[in-house]
Image (cartoon, rainbow, N blue to C red; front, side, top):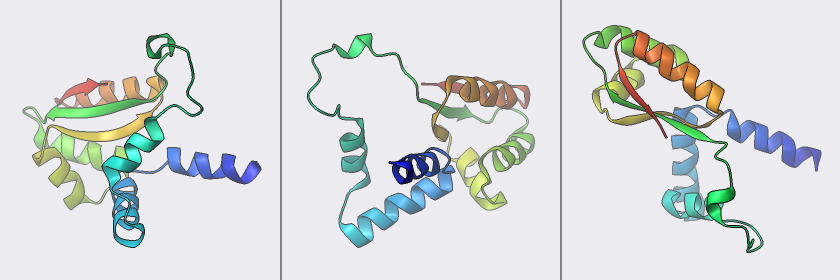
Length: 126
């Protein structure tokens, strides 16, 4: 059981770049399409009878809608917040709207949103 908890912690702490690499490995080596994996993870285990609306959301996605007027500051901040390289951070900002981080806690999502908005970006938390 301790190994599974450790594995879960590792998954939760992956950067966007690492998640993309994991998705590519799952697709190339095991034939698992990333979209199918996301559905499998999101599906409730054991056919629960509780309605979905009663479950409080615990994982949030931070989405960069647009870089705003201070694009360079936003690129540097995205680089620092995600652990991406400079080119990957620039590509993420240039490709907006894009997910900056996924599956984070509400507190972390709000903190990321505040930081990015202070740098001039338009951000959405889902």
